[in-house]
Length: 328
Length: 276
Image (cartoon, rainbow over all chains, first blue to last red; front, side):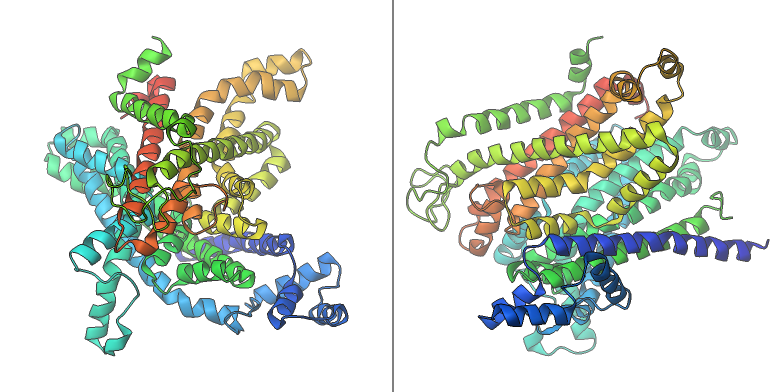
């Protein structure tokens, strides 16, 4: 079979593999909803102030809540697969529309965070590994250890104290200065200015992670036979590190970046609620306070789907980067 | 060489152990150091550190930040330990079944594990606590539910590697039951990676707990570091100390546990040490 044919078959296989995961996540969602005290009708009745038991029974019949559990599950799955995530009574809007509106700021935050964390993580790991057991290595390792142990929300708050309140370099919260009605490049600059602190906060932990990972990966590759061969050929140490070791050491870091996306979304809930960044995480924080369970479940489902999608992309990227991976 | 001497060879692990011992000591003697309820209003509100008899200042209502930190240490360590114990037990059980029996049992259990690893764990934890109503039990359950898959994968790998070894085959031949082989013969042989992973998981559990409490999902009747920071963020502008000191406590504790975990790893797998 041709290379292109193999590749498309691999893509198809990975897609098929993702389907049961998505279905299982929807089932988990459904049972979480069942676990919750009270149902949608109780919520509605609570909103209205009072409702007679007859009226509530009528509503339950209308929403199909009097049906047996498997039937309800079937209806729920059908709704979810057509991306009907239910209705948020607090916001008076369909959940799907709410979460899609907030998706872009979260994606912006995640992309800038991953770029920063992976980029600098690779550089710091490289520096630490090529200066093994010197002061550079020690400083980087201690920095990584401390960042690894610091809670994100605390870093965010401390950055607000130092850089916003004392030094007044960056705004404390929000994504843009709406009152200024910026347009074009001015707006981009304004958003970038607001993006700096949330990105730094969220990336700190992952920067530490990738630094440690890159360092270990470089050291592992450095002990391989092909490095000895390269050295025996008389290549310069510079060329060995940058051309031979670096390329191979990068591969596991790419996989790691994909694996961490799920926890990155979790971290963004905290960072967004600290900086009032108007993304999915902030929406989750608001949903928590208003006890809007439907909305919370919608955010959960969307973020799980996001992780599945990104893992898929990373897998495919990996098969391009490393031809040794069996595609067939 | 004894285990203890190997552990002490790692300088940073010893530092970690000392910090951890201090935190445990403070947690254990919290009721002696600060006999009052940490929620009680004990003096001038918003006192800066060192003034009005407050070592780390007081918060908006006049609660002692230092007292809250001492009592919070208890909660953090306890939740970290219990949640990890639950997660490790669950992970060992499922991982052992998957690795020992293989076949469809393995397939099903590993699919489930993979799914749990795909789900964004912190949001999942938030959902569980929100649905079960915030309490110390729901927080522990939430942390355990999102933490077990890593243990399950590890234990499965160990059991898979062991189940065809000669000593296991010998056990089969003398008619030992599967349960006995799993618990008495294989499990003791893979304890050291489980202990190392477990110790690092305590650190993660403390971080998750503080994050949940920060978002207002802690037990409302129990003071904790995350709760203190969450309560203090509204007065960040005028009283930075309310947020700052509990955060340092979290950082030091988590750092100490991570260092001890790495030290345990070096001491228990001396051969791995040579690689780094």
